[in-house]
Image 1 (cartoon, helix red, strand yellow):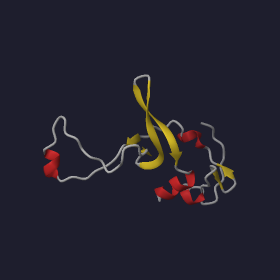
Image 2: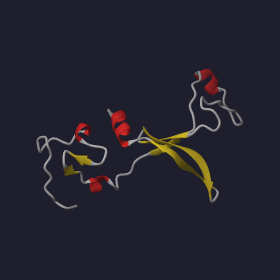
Image 3: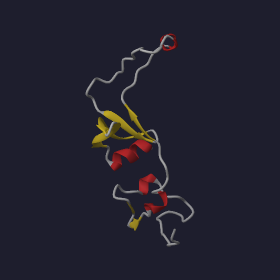
Image 4: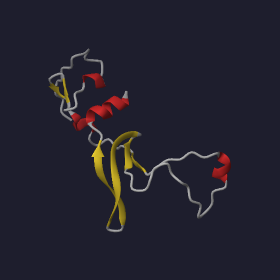
Length: 116
């Protein structure tokens, strides 16, 4: 990691806030060095749908049980990174493995707004 001197608009000891970060990765005229976080692992999850049920019904589930989800057939999946919605997509099969094709990506400004 290089030891470049970065000047931020707030106190040097204070971390940058999302309010100061623009969608293009520039903070008040200073380039933000994202190299320091590019190798940080994140949890990516896909949600097909949700449902709610009483514990009584949950305890009655067994092999072959079918759980009806609130989402209709053909509706896109939700793609989450660390619990934050980042995209929508559809299931694809590639070489006998499941994957997801992104059909819509949440804008950077909307993702930042949802973090607050």
